[in-house]
Length: 266
Image (cartoon, rainbow, N blue to C red):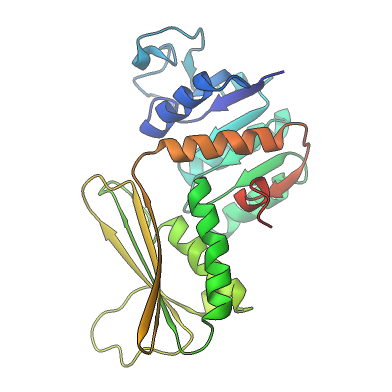
């Protein structure tokens, strides 16, 4: 049986990518297309942007989630948490690519995973999640005498910084050092900062143009520098990763998973 997919933010750029990916996947079917209340696309066919008809209308009625196997959500924290509550009530699994949650939001996701199965990730790209694993290996080897700096760049419309992916990269390094990122992170620098403190992880966020997502982690040591970089040139990588996650969740009733679990990297 094909996996019945619901998509949040169906009229946005990521929503369109997800819809196209679902239509192209023989083992998935589009079940529900959600958009925000007041959105111009409400009532339209979800595939109208492709010049075709799917029979699925874009709606703001969360009751339309009933019967779906999984909701894929790349919206905003407040919207995702509202969707989470309804999915929990209806027994619909979730794939969460939304970033920018505070501690309360993350706790809500964890609590919901007792009743539904959830894959949440800062980045759904298969390549990025491979990079996370490479960073753990590099951090274990380059754990003395190397300074770590993380530089990311995104389009000018991104509203949070640093990116969720950059934070996850920092967490991968910190985890390899048996530390917590919050104890190591230097989020910004300005003015007379003094010398760099050993063992810290620096972040720099660049915003401009239409950059989808570039991330580089620099291990700078005496006489050499190791850089691990991922560059996204198309949002389809997030859609394809999300569908792999949807297949992973098929038949699961509860649990909180990451893309590392989906890809068998844990």
